[in-house]
Length: 523
Image 1: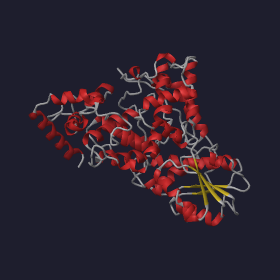
Image 2: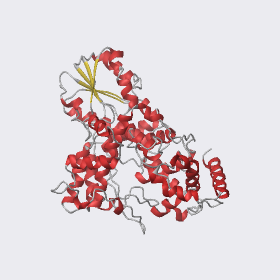
Image 3: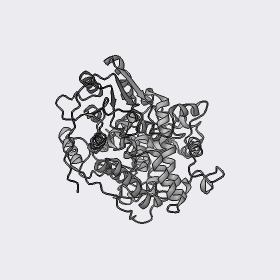
């Protein structure tokens, strides 16, 4: 166990030429903003501000992860003899917003230039674009080179075409030469192995244990700080086990590749009670904080297949998430602009059910999915898409309400990735930009992919009556409410044919049951 002392920032004195503002999700010491820093004349500004943990209710583990990773990164910079002006959360002079802290730093350090990497959120970027005028200081906003796709290239790709992720993904594979044979064809003969990657567990799985990242004094101090500053916030801190340094993040990558990647593919959509992690990577927090680079992750996974350690369906399934979906979602976020957040194509305005903050519900699948979010700040993609997200979609929750919950409650959440995933993929609120059809499903899907329904009081086969599964009731109600809107969507034809078979009385029964559930479960 380390005996190093808690983090204590070193005061920056004297004027500086360039002040590099490093945000909490930009912890990459090779970023363009830091690449040419002069340790004698320049300095770095890092700030812990209350605004970033409260503009949406934020899980304490998410807040602790950001703050601990930031403090460890500041120590890395200081070891390189880079001066760091670090403003801690409990600093008495802290204004608790980025603009306020930059203004204080400019007044005291008098930099000729402020430089920063493009923020990962429209809200912060719009603020940053006012700083040059507000502070009468030159401000340079540099493109974020952490990603594999230039935003200009993405906008060019989107010109005159429907943005279908699979098309983008294939182009990415070819451009980067990933999992290709000598003839520029996909290894194994297929671009996509989803058909092999949808198996459920037939008995209780026994996945390998996760690596442990025991909190050091800096992390323990942050955890205590978060407890004091944000009491009563939904979520718990006791099980904090996230990598907060690049060294730890690389260890997490190695552990995933060696111990869980081989089984990741076939079981990536499966769920099991009491098993929140299974064979998933848990690397998205480190990637989104930029402790890991997506190319090194992809190379490690590709190498594992090339050396015969993992099958192609697992390697391809994971690579697609990183170079396909992750890059695609970011491109959509910046191409669509700030107004994207207000879209609501299905015109849904219901409140988020209170159990999203407590996990107090009789629906076993939702209780399991939300309980692990409260305990770890984590849920894998099927929990997000087909349990917590699917329920919000089919019951009629406001897309923005769910998006804000995802942004605050998951440790890997940054707006560029959370908003289009939630609003577009989960809630179909962008009218089909991200997903060509809504990912609506009844309780039968959850029963097929998990063991949750076995111990639940509701029956996934029933859409009405006292034991009707709310997922099944709301699924049919969702199709009835939006039947006209979906008639032109070819991917919805099969679902709508089933709706057409419902008689008038059965339709009325489903709608009445859905209304009763809304009153009981949502209001």
